[in-house]
Amino acid sequence: MAPPENADALAFDKARSDYLAGDFAPTLSLGTPKRRRVAVIMCLWNRPQRMGEVLAMLAGQVLSGGIDLYLWNNCPEDHEIYEKAIRDHGLRGALRSVQLVKSDVNLGSIARFYIARKLAAEGMAGPIIILDDDENVKRTFVRQALWRYNPKEITAWWAFQVNGAYWDKTPAERGDRVDHIGPGGMICDSRIFLDDRFFTELPDKYWFLDDLWLTYWAHDKGIPLRKLDVTIDFVLKEKNQWYSLVDLKEEFYTELYGQAAGEHTVAGESS
View: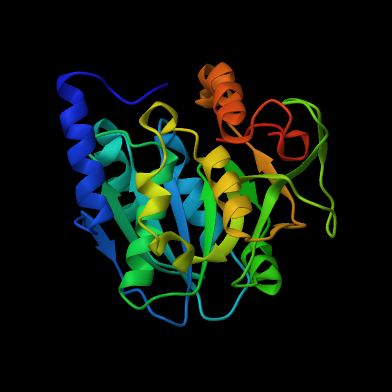
């Protein structure tokens, strides 16, 4: 998958410019986000049947204070399904607010970081948790993530050590060196995304490779990567987008690090 060409590219570029400026708002808002709650951010794409399960999973989290859930829908054709699922579920348990944004173009999963950026810019700086819509987590997931939160680090469940070749990988354990992360199942400080360059310096050709870009950005900026020791299970794997991106990922990795950058070689996929 690559950014659109020709006339569609104008809409794609305008959307990126508008969203970088924070020019977006939820089409559906339940409850009011509060500073004392943890923000959970999720991109939605091609799994509308999961929405009810996701809401129930987050409502069942065991923690005080509650969760503000921010959803970014990249597939406008499914938007009514998401809105209905949210209204049908409502607010209960740990789920104290839900904000649903509709993007008219598919900007890929990097779009979730526009929400993080806007939260920080509006004074809601602090921990954000990123989840993917194909992940199931335990009832203690959010609490465990908060225990491991360090505003100077990125702590991720999808974490690997790499050993000199693109696919030569070893899953990292807690305390290990971490060379590559995937954003699905991570916690970090929202202020990381206040830097415009995180969005503007990512080449168009590789726009949908936010795992590679975030990993590289962290290395380049001296942000330590850590392993989040939690349990996450994947569902609906057949709908993953990364299958069409394997060759492009290797190309982007080589462009970022060069042929001999073994210790930073990307390991595994999660998008």
